[in-house]
Length: 210
Image (cartoon, rainbow, N blue to C red; front, top):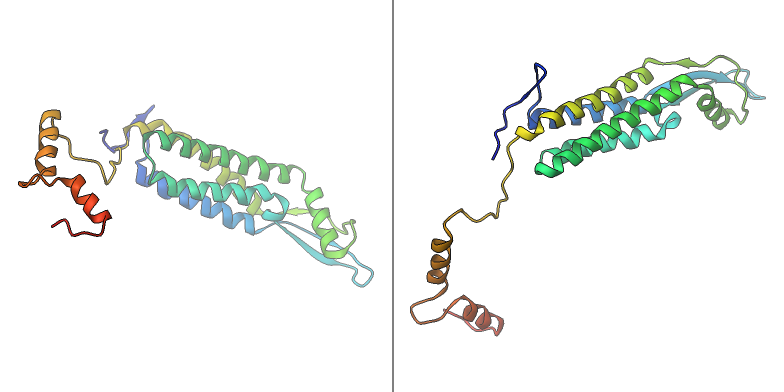
């Protein structure tokens, strides 16, 4: 069993399992909240109103962000439960999800007009904007959270080899092979020659083995 002390990577101490778990949960929740906030603001017009305010949330502009945020949250929960092999899969998935968040949000920031036009059409029925598109700080926040998630998950993975391995609740206590075999035979057989198999057979027939 390895210890759960943080290792050092180029002078930086990598996080423990508990720290990594909580960090992924916080990053996932923050990304999910940031995706629900408005990323873009603009205005459109209709025959009845010269100006209609249009707000585009992150989930509307980049649906992948919400899905990736849920993946990060799931990884945070799973990291507290998985073993040595599973932790690599979990942290690798968190890296991929973080990259997906940053790339998806970055694409909206780089070209916000298509998302704004789509939302304006839903709100006004007209695919013409009456003002320029304003990008809110929430979109930049989500880009940063996605990049931070990817970097942190990769950093945690680099030191996860020193995390303690969680033993199974149903593991048998270690003992010598000879002692284990003889102990099993002694416990299985009763003074009258009535062993565990006979007891199970009696129970299956509805009899009382005692």
